[in-house]
Image (cartoon, rainbow, N blue to C red; front, side, top):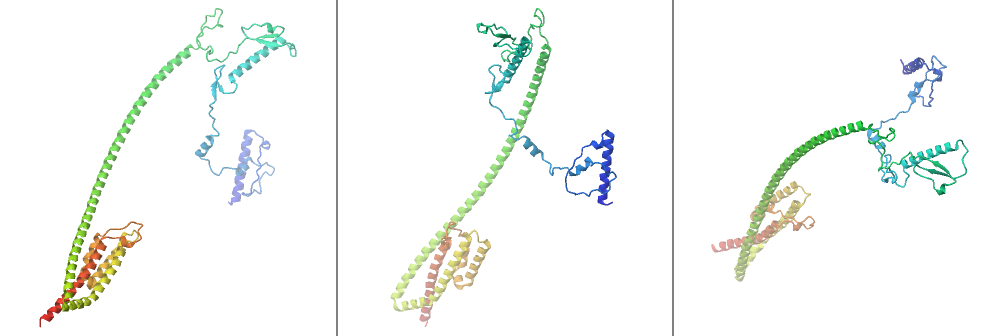
Length: 438
């Protein structure tokens, strides 16, 4: 079945059902309400319906009724209903009425007093109507109203007097109504009847209040005991947790102190090693200084003797080339050591880069005969292991990094000078030996 045919069938069925319900209820279909809604033709309209003269069905408008797209949540509804602007404003200008004792707003008329005045005014009007007898019969004199226990004075002569019993009493807190047990003056001729109407309810109310108070006290005591027990359990749990946390913190602090002591001892070891190395270098420097002084003395003696001085100068000139190569090697080592120390102190250069630079330095010294002769490989290993001095982060001078390498560089320069003179001395001794042998 196509969709349009199914919709026509459903529409016709609903109309028949509606007609049956209206007929069963006893209503006239011609007088039923009709709702006309102008909307887009989303559904195809029926072409052939049995009753062409029938009025449109009320169920037809269901398809076109508006409906909310989203359901409002409970939070939205409660926020709208409990908006502070919609709540009743708390009034702080409340005070008791000085006349009747009831509460009222400041600078406003008391409602109880106004009601009393309305009642008294109605009684006065009734009394005046009884005195006049008919409408439009009011005298032309002034009217005076007298309450109970009041007598007319001299000023009230030639005036119309209206006597009124003060039946509406003021609602004074010091004089409440007669709801308690007192003799009823209107109960009999002798006025000795007692009003026991409220005695039984009051006794029942008092008994109920006593029982309720006792039961409430018992429940309050049980709740208090339970609360104390819960608080004690909670305090015990908190105390245990505090002790466990304190023990864990103490254990952690002890481990940290142990690690700190180890690091302190390691730093002290490094410091002692540096001090010993410095002392050793100073001793070697002193020894080299002594040897240099001795060589200077020998040089002076050799220069003073004619042939020996000429031979010594010739040997020194022959060793000058070796001295130049050694000096060039030390200069290259100085530049590379500065770069290596800069890489060691930098936070951006990776460790692999620094290790590669150290390997290149060791390989270069091992291959160079001058470096092998001076024994620079072991000294470089010592520098790589112990020289960890770095300047501050804002330092821009690379030569301020490192301390041990500068001592070694100075030591190598002195060693090159000493080695030069030793080689010249050995060459001079070899020449003198060859001359003496024949």
